[in-house]
Image (tube, rainbow, N blue to C red; front, side, top):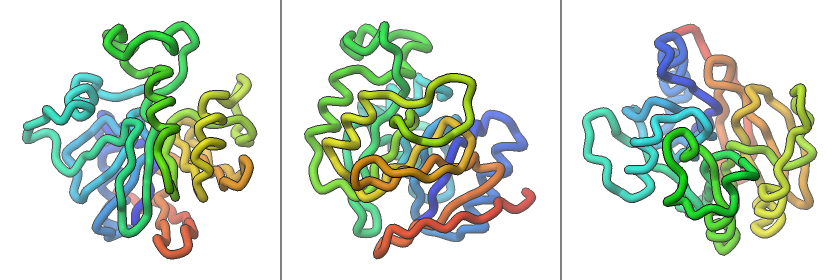
Amino acid sequence: MLVLGDAHATDPARKRALFAAYRAADESVAVQCGDLEYYDLPVRTYFVAGNNEDFDVIDALRHGRVRSRDVENARLLASDAVDVEGVRVAGLSGNYAPTQYDKPRSALVGERRRHFVRADVERAKALDDVDVLLTHQAPHGTPVMEEYDVGCRHVDDLVTALSPDLCLVGHHHEHTESTLGDTRVVTVDPVWESYYALDPETLALTRHETPEA
């Protein structure tokens, strides 16, 4: 299956890169790690929401209300799981803000809808038999280069509770590999740099350069 990092596809050049990755991979299904921002997709794509999205669309997808020619093949994973090519894929949508975490999701308005809340994490922790976890926020221990300390303890707790074989992380626009317990953690490149192929049998991940659009 195709694995995609941040797309930021409201930008025309980055949208072209997104579709170049779909064409080059030539897969029938994809997973994506957030900051997608464009939802009319060529193949079924399971994704988590990032901190940059159309949050009206995200809210509608959370509740199954989207009927739009601008939304095709986009399936949000928001503390739930789905079987993809025989792989059980789960997702936690959003990023962490300490001031918002203990609020009910209904209290988050405007851009604050980009965050996950405690109920989202607890619901995700109740999932079982997860092979691959998608998050936008990284757990601790990922060696990405940022000017701040990277890692969220609530994502740590989720990875520990689910113990997936693989956790795929967006947001940082950098490929890194690390482990948390028995879980291999990979932060993925943005789409305009790379796309990935995931072998459903072995969960081996292969990185490919995204061709010019």
